[in-house]
Length: 263
Image 1 (cartoon, rainbow, N blue to C red):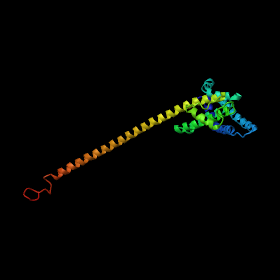
Image 2: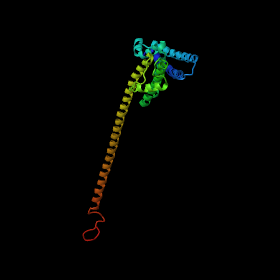
Image 3: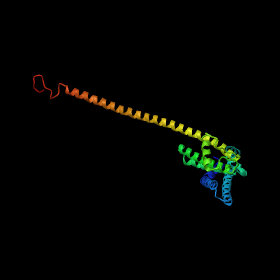
Image 4: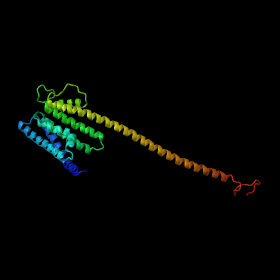
């Protein structure tokens, strides 16, 4: 491992928890801003300023990691999604897409905290992606002319039908930003379904393998016990034959002679 890679890993470990905390704060403030319709324009601006500041910190983290990477081009190519998530919200009509920046940080923390618990990880990731998508599409669509998604309930219903690839078509985004969120959610829904299917298949195969191992272990134990029983039966048979032989020997002291006198 080179010095650059060492510095990159050290940087990521050092900022792992702080970035996770910022992602949680970002998501909480964003949900508060979207769902609280009683906020004044000034309050909305304050919340938006804080969200923008957090988004800038995520962008700065990406720039630092890019500079620490040994191969800048390779790092850039392998993190194109991060680049898009950071660049798209710079356009004013797409600013709600800043909420997508929290997915990477929170997903990384979930993956590390739920290592080995695939089912819990899949459920937590699905809830996270669904919540973010519902908030983002509501933020993008609510004030658009002729919008069909105008309440959080509508957004949640649209998210469920989209992430499960059902797509009833009763609710749909009409803005560019909403359609970007929809496209991202569609791809994510297919990926999540694949992960869920793979997790169940892995669990099923592992269960069958464990059952076979238990049967094999039980069979080995039964065979060992049978061998012990056979050994004991052979010993018992030998003792019985010896006892029979000793009872029928003519030279035994208590053997009675043919004339009736003791030997």
